[in-house]
Image (cartoon, one colour):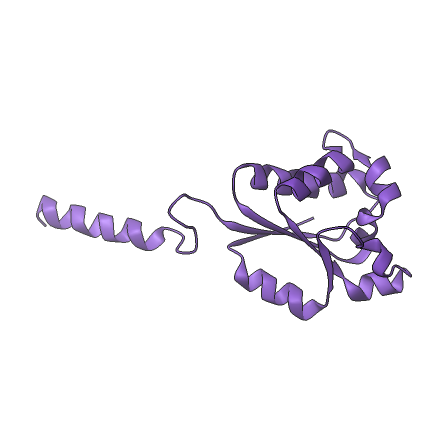
Length: 146
């Protein structure tokens, strides 16, 4: 094969391996799915830290809280939870809100824990069902689960 043909094949291969969903500025849509709550503060805070880091790098971030994680939006939990080496939940949450991150809260998980509309009042959050989680996972380029 001629050198030109080898280079052409290499270029075509490289182009096909690039993630198609990432835009020209290398920014991605990232979904963080959190299922751990205050019983696992390091994991819970880590999820928010990763979301904060991604948002800080300019990625579009969404956070879906399900299972035990729905309590993380309670003000007393936001104010008190801190992970070992992963920071304070309140600081991460405030940075995420400032960055325009949207929160989705499992309606079924919230209902099972007697958490109603007051949980998401004055927060950039909405209740969502499993169908919404599935749709979000398909709309985003990457999904991280904690």
